[in-house]
Structure formats: C-alpha cells, structure tokens
Length: 160
Image 1 (cartoon, rainbow, N blue to C red):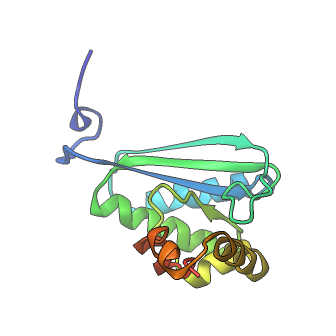
Image 2: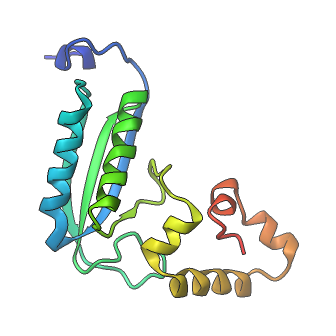
C-alpha cells in the first residue's frame, strides 16, 4: 500500500521537505535523554510526524567530532519540516541542556541550537582553539581562508 504523510498522522497538512537531526550522547545518559524527548513530545500537545531512533558508534578522536563520547549513542530525530517540529527540537535540546546531559549535534543536519558558546561547551575551549589553529595553519593566506569559509562556520566563530 502507498500513502502520504497525512494517512499516518491525522490532521497533518504538510506535503514537503523533511528534517533530520543527529544528537550525540554519552551511552549512560541515552535512556534519560530518550525520556526527555518523549516528554517534550507529550508536552507539545501536538501530533507531529517524528521518528526517534538510536544507533551506537565508537567515539572519535577528531577535535570537533560529533561522536565524541566513547561509545556514542546517536539519537536520530527525523520529521517533516514544520514550525512545530523545529520548535520540538529546540525544546529537546534546551531540556537536555537543562538536565546537564552532555551532547553534540551532527554538523550536517538541522542544528540551529549551535552558537559559538554552545560549541565551546560541547567540545571544550582547548579542542575548539586547537581546531581553529589547525585550520589556520593549513590555509596559507587570508584569501585562501576566505575561500574555505562559509556563513555556518563564520557564525560559529570557527573560521579563525
């Protein structure tokens, strides 16, 4: 059988783009973080087309690797891109932060919660400073550095 999203989620009018978010968590805090995500959904009072899943990966040694916990529980949150689902993700991130659960966000997925201060909190000043210094040492001039900059890393103050 084939259907569209509103066949699965009553009242859903959205036909369009999807939204994905990856959250890296320390494995011992993964269940607590899952409860936070469920509670945020219940408290929203809305029916949203959201899928929560987990995968578990080895931690990385990369300075700003989002799988920095060893092992890392990666919470995937996939949804239809609506104002409600974006608000839900903001709530989940804020509630994880308020609960003191360390987490990172996948660099290539929806991650509007990231700010320069939050990146430093997630990875530590030493790792961020070392990453910026490494980047600067690889780029031979301000002109080359400009070519390898974009609004995202500039906004997060990672462009050097």
